[in-house]
Length: 316
Image (cartoon, rainbow, N blue to C red; front, side, top):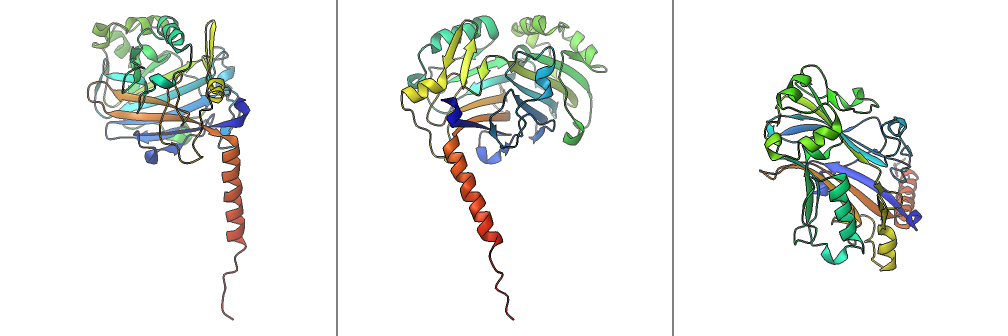
């Protein structure tokens, strides 16, 4: 059933998809995103990737690392704030343009409880609201937090290469972690920053590099299924059993969460400021009908062939 679909990933500095670029999934070269407040190098990896561009690697050496062999995807970033960001204000998660309460598949309530209990206790939001959202504090939600050195700019994207981020610090970043009483290991650090008082002691300093990685084994993009401990939510199967249609390729403009849906079949991840509402980056995972993509590619190739074969009509 899932073979009918292909995945396309785009990202940019705003919700408006016209500001986005296609993400080359599993590429060692990140996508650079810049706003007046922050510079970001973004890398997206998906295990057994089946999507666009069609020549994308199916996997990444990342998933061979001992600490990542169970994981299905990763959203990794290096960020360089241009203005300070308070620790309690940097949040990461999903939000939605329209209500999704009538489109949630059976079992969603159970899935949400499992996520809150076993995966991210800091997750906050209301998926049943008119403006649904699910956010967690960046300090407690990201699996890896690495504090780097002071810098004028991020590495050039061509210099980044393939790497697997691990918890810790570089240079005097260790001093910054200790000043905020940040535990050395990821698990204790995530638990530590569930406390708002601890969040308030941490600041994402302007002119300092921070590296973060969000990954888990729970979302299978090939089946578009949420696979939690002891519970699986087959989203694509539900869509098709309810005959929920996809819009035509290229005409999609709304969003869905990892466990919600609508006719657009999209997942939207957002890094933003809780206090100012400023958006730092948006990543869209879009599920497209393979048939529509192949038609589009066929038309595109035919147009190119027709253009190549046109006589320039020169006068003798």
